[in-house]
Length: 320
Image (cartoon, rainbow, N blue to C red):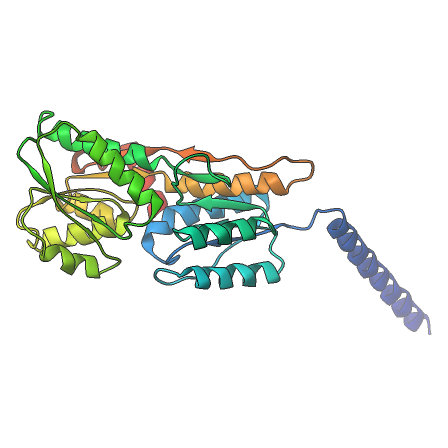
């Protein structure tokens, strides 16, 4: 009997503790201490160009106590596809979103609709004028101009008589348009001519480049294009053209190290991830104000400076 009574009392005690813990957890949620959930939607999220960005997101989530989830996407999304993903995430009870918007009016309207429902941070955006929503990313115009400066420095400030080809994955993307304008402004006044401009996504770009007229330089405005141009150069399919580009993946770095690309301007994707989530976390905190746009830096990587301490840190974030 005594043992039965002890077991009964012990059981009652355990149940009381569990009930108290449940009550405290529910009270914590009602007081806003529930871990906040943030979803991230970007184009082709599994591509290696996002490695540093996602690493920054993960570290920020750990540091700030945020539940962060990068939605799996493949290839280039349409506005309708992105809208379906956003709606799915909102239906699941997400507290805020970080989104790479689709270029065009339909994509802009989708962002307005999304921002009406949850706090929204944009990445990869570079529209003209003051943005409607907070944006975290590099100065795309400045990166294009830096690329032009690097090219000019290699030729003593004079590329007169030289010819260029320009390649990008999506000529309609505001970010890439700003990079292109920055580059063209950077070589303004030079007696050089742009022979061709092509825009292809993914591996198709490599085969498109082979068909273009011979040029002295190929200027790649994004990571995918730089990888395609680097590969075409390595396979001797660019008629001897030298490649200069903007990129942010270990694969693009490989072509710089291999000598198939002369120069690579690299945006700080790690900080883009960390700062974008930090701004979102701040907006979700009690008594906080709205989010602010953040501009991250960029750096120049060449074969000769590949193994400096700073660039090794960049390579590390790309490999995570």
